[in-house]
Image 1 (cartoon, rainbow, N blue to C red):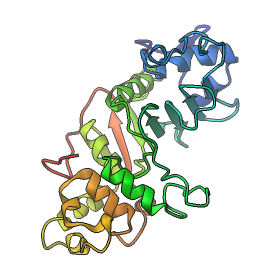
Image 2: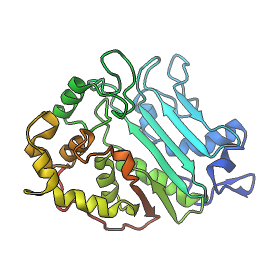
Image 3: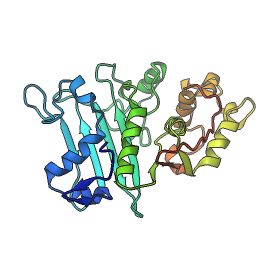
Length: 274
């Protein structure tokens, strides 16, 4: 990031809402630092103009004045259906920074249509409907729930860019709402702790042990209920996605936070294998 307070015309920026009120060019100068520096050139996108060699702009920033919401979306090629990179951040009601979504796709990898059912209707991450055949294919290919493509293994690096951004805004902590069990464990590995949900996460681990309540639900009745899934982060996440908890993941209201330059050392899945 910028390595210090974000100053625009000598005024320190303290929130996304404040940055969103800036002219478009100045907003872009601030928010461009949230995109991994080598990601755009890797796909032939100019890091200054945000366009490809044909002049087609492939980076879009949604930062509407008057709001505390930011979405950065990069597509690798014109008319490509999925983002190469997507980041969504927001201001909370008490002026904290919150990570809402991070996606980094490998556009050359196989696509799995878990986001659409067989009629083409959106699945809303499996909350409204599911595409079971595509989910099974994705799981067997090593993807986690919600992934349509393999990632580029840049999540740790991206998390550091967000942390630097939070620091530059003058925040001591920032928040994240993991969209799945696997996301929560990844955030633990990155040094996050819990505002809400830690007892539930510990309970989940305990009940996935042999003889536990969740372990007994892994009865082989479908591909997402196989016993082996209890042994991995991704496997547990698929079982949870399949409803093994008796309620969808979002209703657990798991909220996490990280202190800037500090690792919490929280671990609810000891010796976990992803």
